[in-house]
Length: 227
Image (spheres, helix red, strand yellow):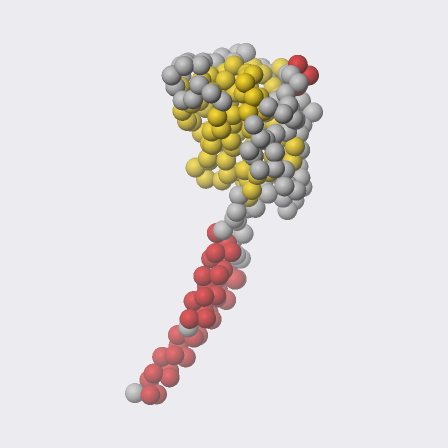
């Protein structure tokens, strides 16, 4: 019976567990490269978007969190991070995920924005991280990475950088302009993703349940004969 219980636990763990990995960004393979002091301004009408393209089937396609290098001029303010699908090289449609948080450091610092539940991304598809000010509060900034590197796929993930990787909107996301050629550096960020959780087929659960039931029945029979 213990063996059957262990089997059921193993099936459940295999279905539920997935380890997030750093898959894309410009802060090095460990995500710890230094932040610079130059920055993009984020306001209630000026948004910035950074794009990324997922690898083929079998890659790490379950988006868990994004990490951004941010700072605020004074005090603290709210920030909004959204994930959009791509259409014709720009963010499109309703946001696939929205995370809000507070920026409270006047010096550049890394802020982690974790999705409530992982977002399953399609393979070979482009998505956008869009950063904006949700409440017209204190102006804050998305800072550059210090090394001036373009974002790349990290740790063998296969993620890549779309042709127009950096976009800016000055009208609250109504329209977007390619800013890739205007900046030698891109805003500091990295993306964490994991392999989608594998849900066992119904037949797998049925077989495990049948084994458990059979073992319980056999144990009952032995106890009945003994008594």
